[in-house]
Amino acid sequence: MFPNGKKIADFLDLYYTLDSASPFQRYIYASRLNFCVTLEIAKAQYLGSASSFEKLCSAIPKSFGSRASIQNICNFGYQSKFLIKAQSKNDKRVQDILIKDEYLKYIDLWIKMHTGVFDPAVSAKKDKTAII
Image 1 (cartoon, helix red, strand yellow):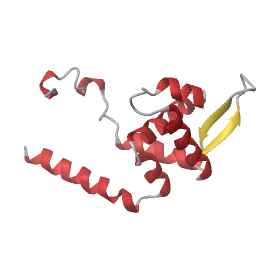
Image 2 (cartoon, helix red, strand yellow):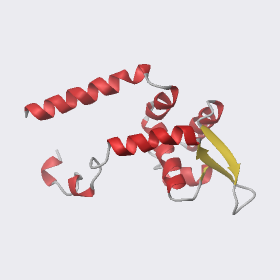
Image 3 (tube, helix red, strand yellow):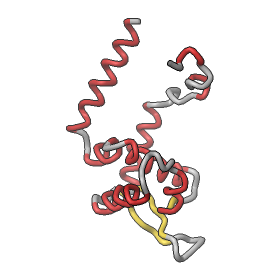
Image 4 (cartoon, helix red, strand yellow):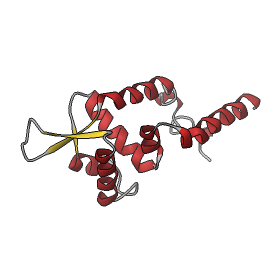
């Protein structure tokens, strides 16, 4: 049990330092919804497509936040220059939402740091003993 306690302590130490983290890190971790919005946008970019406000609203469960909350998070991202809008190549009426390349590098780092953590073989659904 000791290694798990140490891992949790290390995680909490890292988590508590977010107050002194970069503005982009604080933006990502400000709420569960901020985190999901950011990762949905990054996911689309990595897949070679783009996200839009409507795509975000349909992808993120409504229990995580309302359309207005998603819009507020995006607006803050635009104002802070973390996110940019670009006219969609497929539909001129749609504004694609992208993470600026300089901030996408942080997402790359986040992925490297969490490689293996989200392995489906370790998920709570497969490990019935993890369900409380």
